[in-house]
Picture 1: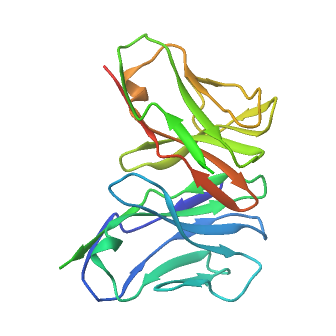
Picture 2 (picture 1 turned 90 degrees about the vertical axis):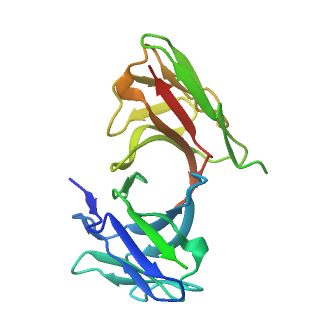
Length: 113
Length: 110
């Protein structure tokens, strides 16, 4: 079975610091997509960043970057220069070849002023 | 484009009542899906559809029915609501590797 594991239920960091959220997944497929979604208190699901498994280069989107280790099945999210607006639930997700998305249980991130 | 819309935003039901959660998208996406979100559980797939007339079960389908008569609409039906169905429900449509989520419906079953 394909699974996504986020080992940090909750984290807190000071504003302007860098924080890394962990994610591991399990699959026997060789080609797939990985995502990080942000869910602020408004409940809206917002795509933060995506990574295609066949691309070795780590994806970046402004202050957000990933460390994708395919052999280790690890997909961590780094947020640089964290801002108060980054406070949210963050979900790691995996899309398989049938286009089904499997989500981790989430990490609640608090950015402290 | 309105994107993915869901109605209602909030709903309270009594055990045994039935209702339909509406979902519509105006992006002409073939793939649509329903998820439920429970505290500490992430999002779990209920049902999905790869096109009009085609639906299939996801991870947690029991107690829910779906149909897809048009590309735009993908309603989720609760035939006899139970307290275990208290949750936040998200509809999504996708094109390729990009999923677009609706704003969600918070459902409480008493």
